[in-house]
Length: 177
Image (tube, rainbow, N blue to C red; front, side, top):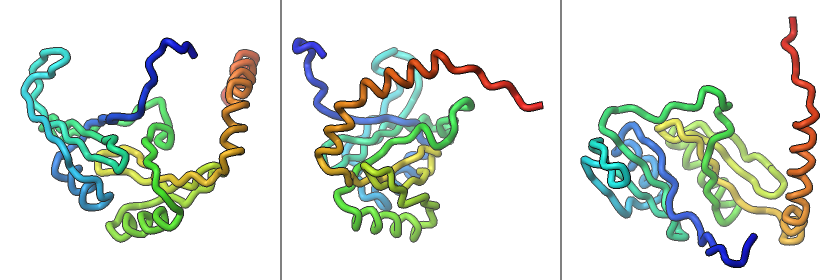
């Protein structure tokens, strides 16, 4: 990485389409505990100028970053990608302890939300669930010691190079008859 590049300081917000602004507010504020801190209501998209009335909601996390949603007023949620398994596209939000993870798992279950996990990924432990818009969420707690994380960093490029080489030489699978 070049020393002249400005550092990316962190996440400001991640934005997703929602079906219903109030349903989304209830989930993120009342169930997950993320306060609604900003709302933008416009008829035109500032970046393109196109006419598309919307409301843009921002829910703040403890570190100041946000998860945000656009309600276009048409009762439509974002459609899942037809070429991607439902477990791939997700956003992971960090909690501070395994006790907090268990508390949130129980809270979600108490609100009738199906929860998968606790899953041990060796460097984090996680639970998975879907919001009312079909967005897959992960609540996760880091559990790996600093030396393990340092080792991951040291070996990341070599692991990627090995994957690229394997994919280059892979024989395509043929359908079973």
